[in-house]
Image 1 (cartoon, helix red, strand yellow):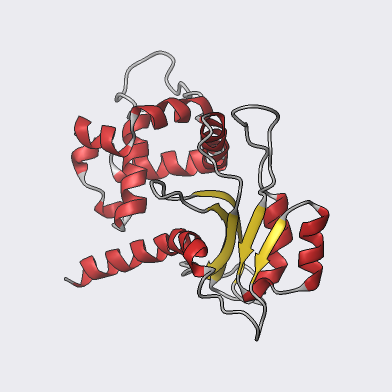
Image 2 (cartoon, rainbow, N blue to C red):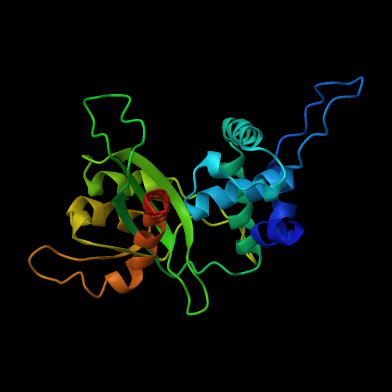
Length: 246
């Protein structure tokens, strides 16, 4: 079990996670009761559920904590915005090491399944994930810089400005923090002159395919990493469905 936990939560990730996780609440100051499940084991179980596609009730007992404990810990951490803070810490760590390539980024979107439906029935039940991502080097996998979630009936072009503004100030290896890429790649869904003008005003070069003129095939060589990341939740759901059907 220790090897599995260390593989899912490596030492470097665990050190960063401890910086953002809220302190443990002492429910029984007088002592007694069951021993509290470790945060590292719960984090490993959460990562396993998110990446394997199994349901929370199918969580193997090898991790130690039971699935209700893992669900409560996940809900508590989500309410405390631990995941957003962890994302910021990871970006700062990568930026300080010089492992973020700000020379170009890509933006794209995709629809994922909504398990409970939209809260507002005037909107689509299929939420759309849209994000800006650092395209990968030959030996890297890409890093999400900004993420937004909206109804699937929202046009892609409406998400560009909020996503660019949503890039957090990230530490650099040398110099001040930065939050603007040098160049932004996008497909024809963002082919609007006002968006190009808005990017130029912020000194961001753009490479946006033009409708009826350019082909977006070559842009896909850079934007595939965004679609890959957006498709992960859907892929996990399909994996669980296949396992259930076997």
